[in-house]
Amino acid sequence: MRKTVLSIAFLLVSAATFAQWSIDKGHTKFTFIAEHHGLSEVDGYFKKFDGKITAAKDDLSDAVFEISIESASINTDLEMRDNHLKSEDMFNVEKFPAINFKSTSLTKISGNKYKMGGNITIKGVTKPITLDVTMNGPMAHPNPNNKIPQLGIKATGTIKRSDFGIGGKLQNIMVGDEIAIRATGEFQKK
Image 1 (tube, rainbow, N blue to C red):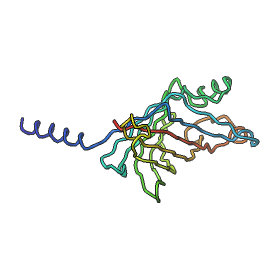
Image 2: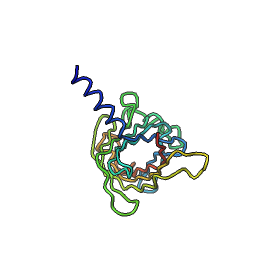
Image 3: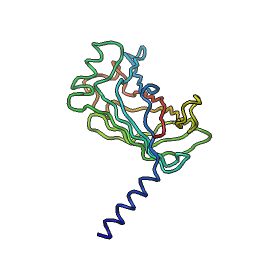
């Protein structure tokens, strides 16, 4: 009994020391750019996602970022292409409804510039990724009526679609293998 009480007390103290930040969906976007036929680029974004940051330190140096994106929410402003991207050969959204990211490290480079390591899972395949991150804040909201601390994030990196089995039947001349990814957004402290 005493062990149980101590365990519960430890969990409560541990939980109280971690701050949670929730994603501000109205000010966040997850985008990608792919080379198209060696002539131009095609860009797109995902409409539905969720995410949070958990950190014990006020400077967020120990922050863990967790993002989940609904793969069926992909949008390139061309319905025929979007339907193809949702198909079995591409994102296979029926079988793999989510794209997930969880950070494993955050290293300050200088000022508000960081390198973030993490794991990204697409189509059931998990690969490590390193992102270049600009982090603005945490700071008070500019609106004096809103006292909730805010944090702005911009993260960029690249993945190879072939690493995740995306478009295995496509030749790289049709759609480039390297896909630039970019996330910009805001988080609010809970």
